Length: 177
View 1 (tube, helix red, strand yellow):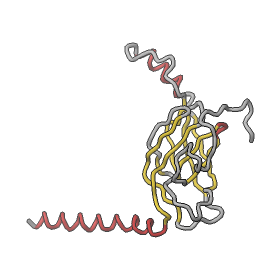
View 2 (cartoon, helix red, strand yellow):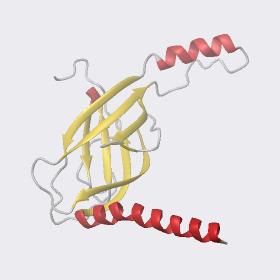
View 3 (cartoon, helix red, strand yellow):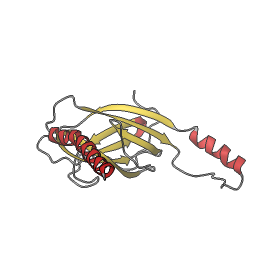
């Protein structure tokens, strides 16, 4: 009986301590939501994060996804607020997949595919959201290893969505520096 009460009290104590930072973060933030992404490139996004928080999903070429939880903006937007986006690109197709029967062929194919993976990181400004409802963050992966972000609650493609770029964007022969 004493052990059960001790475990119960310890659990309550630990859970209460864990909820404090979340409560403080919500008080300082303008609301939280999911981390989503739109991929405007021919490459797959193997994984990505916003300020170290995972976007969860692998996103195929010219597709959307995400679903990581959670991203919250500060309650008041100020000039100079930025977010760091880290991501890995890779081949967005299974072309040439030899199957699993011949392990040697499969391993050679896998090495060829993973050799094309590239790590990227970029810090970008968080657009002004003053007077607007915020709904997490959406990262747009663009050609030339560029990104844009929005905290808009509107969905991509709606007339009120702030980023009006086509889903399928071609990479130029020479990327701007």
